Each structure stands twice: as structure tokens, then as C-alpha cells.
Image 1 (spheres, rainbow, N blue to C red):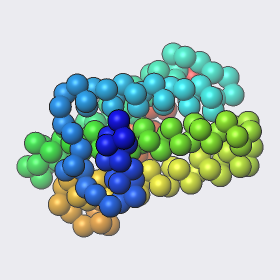
Image 2: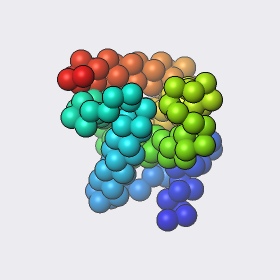
Image 3: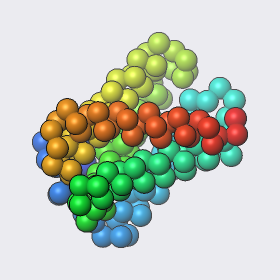
Image 4: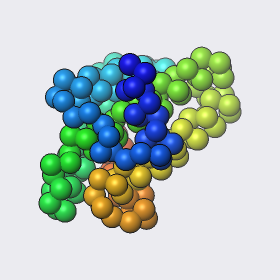
Length: 167
């Protein structure tokens, strides 16, 4: 367990690339499932009027869009064989950062408090930087292109998630 944690922690600190992430199907599935569960917890925690169906649909759409666009970008560069490691790295790092946010939210007060919102913003920026780094390494593109891709994929998935959510 410690070794898995260190893989994602080193990715979050930009020390290692997505090539070190295990790609067994059971591991990818476990990371995706855990990421979904923590994402659902945070969505229900941060929402002023929690709606399970709306949170589930938003989460499912954002994850599906992120995975689809990432696969398509890798396919265009003829690197689609790197998809399992890349998506596991993206979701695994977001899982780790989401767990950090979930832990801190317990101490910073209600979701609308300035401390909670500031920490959530900081984690969001860190997540974009990590995603840009992962895409930069997985696609063999410059750091800038990786960051632009990460920001674009993030904004696109959020936009489609908001459209799909019945809230």
C-alpha cells in the first residue's frame, strides 16, 4: 500500500512520470472506483443542497469526458498504448489530492468558509499542474502544451458535467 501511495505522491510532486504507474486492469479499475467514491463524497460535502443523482451524473460525465479526450489526444499522437498508465496517473493523483482535501475540510469548517474555499482552490491549481505534467510526459509534448491540454480537458469536462447534471 505504501508503494502505491509513493507512486502517486511522487507524481504529485512532479518527481516521476506516468510510466511508473501499474497498468493491470484490476488496479486501474480500483483507482477509478476509489476516485469516484471520494469525488462523490466531496460533491455531497461541498453542495449546499446535496442531490445524489445530480452528483453521480456530474461525476460520471466528468470522468468519462476526461478519459475520452485523453484517449483521443494520445491516439492522435499514436501513443494510445499509454492510455492505461496515463488515465490511472491522472485519476490516481486526483484521488490523492481529493483525499487531502477531504481530510483538511474536516478541520477548516463549513464548505463556504474562506479557509475551506482557499484550500480547495489551491488543490485545484495543484491538480491542473499535476495533470499537465502527466500529459506532458505521456504525450511527449512540451510542458506548456501539457498544461494547456490539462486546463482544456478540465474545463471541457466540467462544462459537460454541468450540462449533464440535472441540478
